[in-house]
Image (cartoon, rainbow, N blue to C red; front, side, top):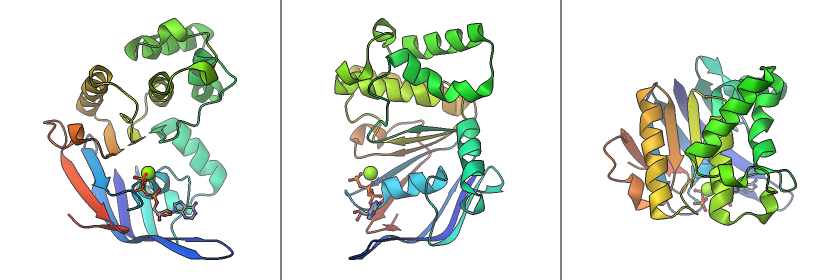
Length: 222
Ligand SMILES: Nc1ncnc2c1ncn2[C@@H]1O[C@H](COP(=O)(O)OP(=O)(O)OP(=O)(O)O)[C@@H](O)[C@H]1O
Ligand SMILES: [Mg+2]
């Protein structure tokens, strides 16, 4: 389903070169729940962005669902991502001046679904993440935990085959974190592949997690 082979990623700016990933290989199967852990700066978010096709490796290849995502032109990878991947960003990337509901609708816009179906799907995810009471509130007025729930709802509204979640529980309380685990477990059982980058120990002894990879200085060490 997801295959990274001999990945190296170097960020280059005018003044310096940062080697973010040195020699990463990773295989995540259909319905596998994989956790990436490791110190800040070890390369977790970089791995997720390569799988999503949001950035390209300096060398090596990234295969997702049989496609070499690292070689697709940007317009194709954007389309592929919208159809197949739900990305819960570390910094949410919500549109602050739109309402909760409108933020969640965004990934559905290009899909040409009947309006009633859109409404239904959005309502369902808002209820699942206890954010329906804020449906018409502008996102910029929400608390951190509320914004995190909107970001999760937006990632799931398209029924993706792959979920990439970057520190998804950073701003959730214990109850909401457990609810998210239950939802991840349910999705995994439906065959969704899940990769979570996290420091949260909650993920380290969950029965539904299949593999835990530890990253250190741009490498997977265990
Ligand atoms: N766009 C960029 N330009 C330059 N360097 C970058 C860029 N993005 C990430 N880096 C560097 O690459 C390394 C890996 O960063 P990354 O964000 O993947 O780490 P992380 O494990 O997700 O950290 P955290 O736990 O703090 O989120 C870091 O040294 C970071 O400074
Ligand atoms: Mg990160």
